[in-house]
Each structure stands twice: as structure tokens, then as C-alpha cells.
Length: 508
Image 1: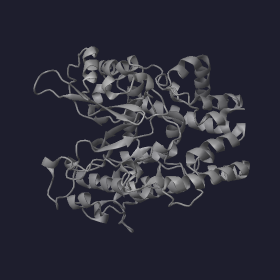
Image 2: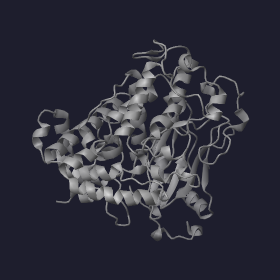
Image 3: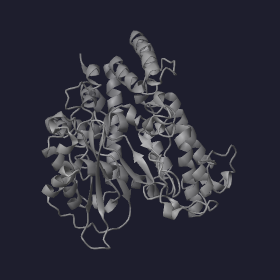
Image 4: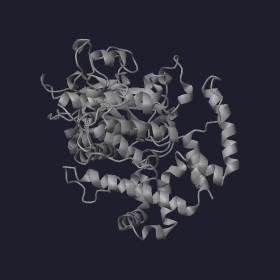
């Protein structure tokens, strides 16, 4: 790091895995043995990309890319075959090179200065009804991006953060199951549609029978893929772009806040779902130029560019390689469970809605003076963020989230905690049923620390809420008995001493 001009003591460090693309293919891991001193020496020479291989010409090359975001050292590792995450030797490699080296240099994993997002291959997620079911599942479990794998923030905003946003997702999911994206309803998609980003809108009156009530799109493999591709491309504008993070900051001169970029600030992001010949979502570079298909050719799976993906942005930092690997496998194993249990029904009402899409109504009822103050502050903030273009007292949902949590009574807090923790335990249990490793006799053990401690405090303040939930009661006992251990596995908020956003909501 010396050549950067910044000493490690002055850097606000966050160890982040920015993007891991999982390709479900069978590859033998290359020999990754290399001295950590060599990696540190390479860093001092400002070598930002590290390539590992067995030394054999035909073996795959594994690349670790290094870069910097504001306040953050960022590692990008892609692509990674899913089988590698099942191999403990790969986890040890990640620990030695991606975690231990920065930690030795004084960096820390924290929540406030970045995230541990990862992406999974679109070639997998566009099979069957997996994508739409994953989205529906996340709509039903907002705790994932707020209380469990992340905290409420505008960089990866919950699908259920506002009423308009939730309604948009619910509507497009209903359109999917009506057959509105099937090629028999909207026409066969061609390369032209992708390159010009047009023709993905749902049919107003699709013929019946195009999507089976449980099995999904009818027809051959191309028809299924085209149905799911059209749905995913339409979803970006129809739902993902509704109240994403930083929405007020849209401007063509801002690289991160262009109109085609702003929608990525969501707990799930489909901006990288592209085919060969389209432009890279950030750089504008032509993707896979040597593989660009004919303009009028029907789109099929083989045309997806190498890194076409479904990004899980609702992920905070990870304190170890094992912590990160288990987070990735929780997501992919749950996806495998969804493939065998399709047609997730969206829940119209949850206890958590009181601090999410209905938070403003909660405050209007329980703390009107707080809401009035927040609206006044929001008007000034919206003007500033939008270059004086947006005159609105719209309060950011994350601000409303903590204000509403502070306002609701203890019994309601306990009910939200019960719902959130139960939902997470259910997800872990389902994912564990698809885990081939047999590593954990207690499926919750690698994930128990992910639950925000505030939830346990709320739940244990009302012990009667546990009486009818044996699994939850057992989890509560585990947490109480080992609280210090689980808290130590969580990343700190910030090395700067800044106050976490939930601190005010937890003070007496």
C-alpha cells in the first residue's frame, strides 16, 4: 500500500468481496499454493490483479482483482465454480490471501463502509421459475436485507421498503404467472430486442395456459429462457427502478447515478443481465465482442455474456472467509430448495410492514411530531440531493424504519422479532436440506450470529412470545448462552467510532 500515498493507519478499511459470480460447472480447483509474502510484495508493486493457476496450460486461471472504492479496499473474485465453495481448501485459500493479508496490514471488516455483495450466474437463475420465486421469497422475508444479512440502507434497499415499491414487485410477479412474458404472448425475442433494450413489456391480455400454475413457462428450453429473460429485463424498469436508493440523485453526469444505474441500489440487482454485443453496464465497453450474434437471431441461453448475473446486494461485510462462504452457500442452497418447491405466493401483509412500507402511517399514529420533523428535514435533503429539482418531503424508508421501531410498543417489537427470526431459521433449515457437505450438525451454527442483537433483546423482553415456538425458544437459549461469542463474529459498525443508525433507537 505505500505507493498509494496513504498509510494504513489513515485508511478506513473494509474488507469487501464485491462480486462473486458462481458458475455451476464441474471444474477441478487449480493448485493455489503461493506464499502470502509474494502477494504482499505484489501489492507493494501496485499489481492490482492476482492470477493463480496450476502452471498447466489447459488448467483454468483463477483471478483475484483488487481495487478501491471510497473508504474501502475491494476484492473482486470471479468466476468461481460453486463446487469450490464446498471445498474447505478453497475457504482456507480465501482466508489466507483475501482476509489475513489485509488484516495484518491493519484493515478491518466493518458495516458502514461497503458491503459483501455477491452475484450468481444468470444461466442458473433463469431456469424454471427460480428467479421469480427467489424475488417472491425475498418480498416475503424483508428481514434478510434489514435485520439479518444486512442493515437498512439505501445502497441495497429492501423490495418491501415502500408501498409503491412493493406493489410494483407484486404486480410484475402476477404478470409473470399470467403468461404475460411468454414469447407466445409478446413475440419471439431477438438480439435486436436486447441491443436496443426494447420489446420486453408484458402482454396486456396473454393467452391462457402459457405458464403452468406450479411448473412455470410451457414450451421448449428456448421458450422458457425467453420468458424468464423478458421478465427479468422488464423487472428492472417496472419494479427495481421504483424508489431505489439514491433515486433523487439521478443525473447523466454522475457515473453511479445515471438513470440506467440508479436502479441497482436494491437488495437484488439485474443490471448485469446482458447478452454478447450489449454494452457493459458501467464502462460502456462491448461485451464479448467476438461472440456477437446476428441482429435478428432469436435470443437463447448461449448468448448470455460470461458475467450475466443476479446480484445479491443485501449483504454486509464478512469477518472471515468461512463467514463469507457460508453466506454464499446459504443463498445458493436455498435457490436449489426453491427449484424443487416452486410457486412462492407473495404475502400481502407482514408484522414488519409497520416499520417498512407502512412506517409513515405508524409514525403518524404513534409519533406525529417526529414524522413532522423528519418531513421537514427530508425536504431540504431531497432538494440538495437532486440539484434543487425535487421539491418533496419524501422521507427515506431507512430513516422511517428506525423512527418507527423506536415508536412502536414492546409487544409489537417482539412480534416483529419473532417473525424475522423465524423467517430466517426457516430459510437456513431449507437451505441445509440441500447442503451436500454434512459439515454442520446444527444448521444455524454458521448463521446464528447474523441475527441483529436488537431482535433478541426485543424478543427476550417479552418471553411469553416464545411459548408457542419451540424452535425459536431453543434459538433464544443458544443466543443467551453464547452472546459474546456470536457478537464477536459480527463485523463492527465502523473503525472511525461513528454511531450506528440504530443506536438512537435502542437508547432508553
